[in-house]
Image (cartoon, rainbow, N blue to C red):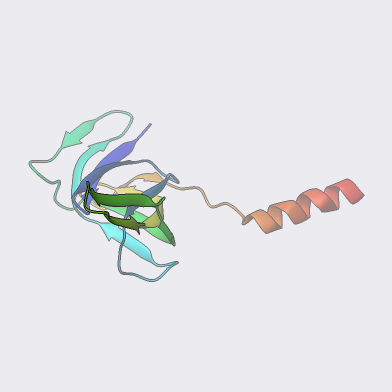
Length: 132
């Protein structure tokens, strides 16, 4: 099983092909492909390559699926005996991505996501088989 560890938004993530991750919000359009060049570790079935600090030329490619909000975090301030309260909430925004390719130094593809049909097409195929 091959994987890569890359860094974005001050955090490190373990990526395998076709894995869906929630990372810090990126300022790109939904549906675009993103390349992460800050790859710290590459591992395929035979070798492991560790960067110091990064591996030059290694790329993790992903597709931006959606921009979502995290659960609400409540912030509550109270000053005792002063009848002073303040309640506030915060929902952090995240980008939901799907890893499509992991490439090593020379542009060699280590791992790639398999192309799948959208769910609607799969459901249509199943329904057509049941009718026959």
